Image (cartoon, each protein chain N blue to C red):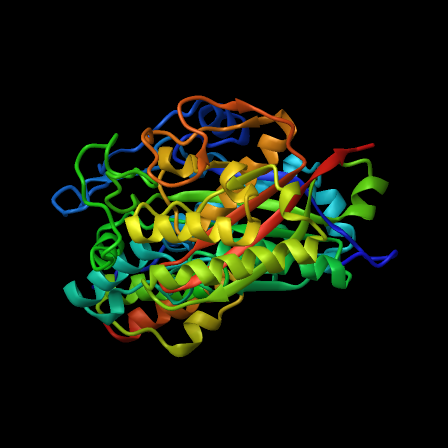
Length: 85
Length: 415
């Protein structure tokens, strides 16, 4: 699977793995405070990475769980998925 | 205990999530009416197990009071704890604005017997069913018996002393005593108590090994301590959190001082060695009374451990006679937990909540489902008894051998 992770997918994963509800459009408008401001902690982000790895059958780089903002995160995971295609 | 400038520990707030009520008001109404809510176990995955009767919390909607972000990372026992802590803080009229000013002046103490069984089971099933990659990261914290202390402190921003007491079922009382000690040492407020959620398949299977567990199928006969028909105890979920606060600080802010935590002591006599618990419990009672500066005759009501195992019941009745002398056979004794079950560490905290409410209302709640008492005790059965209550003694024992006694004195409101 090489489908790109959209903001909609990320928003759904944030709700499932971290219990945080946020409008997809609002995700990319977040500044550097990013995930912290939303209340997604490091374990929450780790859970999101795990869900992506399981659904795509591809390991994500270690940096994925260290991303500070949704934009950084999407750029990283999508480039990883592209590279693995 | 009686130094002139001693900081005394007051109870200023009560939050209850119990099988017979998910607010302090409904809990007290059901408790003083002697309503029994013990019923067939209906929890999914438990129906076929030998445990037939329990005290389930059925009217609790965690999402109504707790943010989803906290719900996904916690087990049911922590959901109970966060909700009960909210209720207790509301009851004490301590809002976010009050506690955020001096976050280091408020801490949390809980006790837990087993931690997050349902959460842990779900994630272990993922592990063995699908593989390690399918275990969620929150498994690392949700199952942990310390989770409730941590999550209450994080969610409410409390940065004062936080701890967890792991001392068996009696740990519920030990947590309250620990909170009182923290208050005496200088912390203004401790949110203290215990909640448990042992009614999930994995947790129930673990309990089946307890020889004291009642597997009787009739809810009205499954848990009848102090009678010839005693056949063990019925487990329960839920619990209570209390606000334990420096009396002086409470009075200065105009809060109701509902009771004082006056004395406590704990002993250990070995797992399921019930005959030996007599001496351990009696010693705890004597030491707790001594710390409270309280004569045996001053005890107006006893909230009994009431395990429901003949040997243990006998030991408890004898311990009261040993520690209180002739008063031990005259003082009213009650065990409202026969109507809701024993929530392990949470059981004595619910008893403490009931004791405070009993002192406030001048009413000793009865012991549901218990009639023909076969020990030399004045057990309150049938209906609540009106009585002037100034001092209450709460007892607890754990299956692993801990014994604990807590002495409460009636507060003087906001006078």
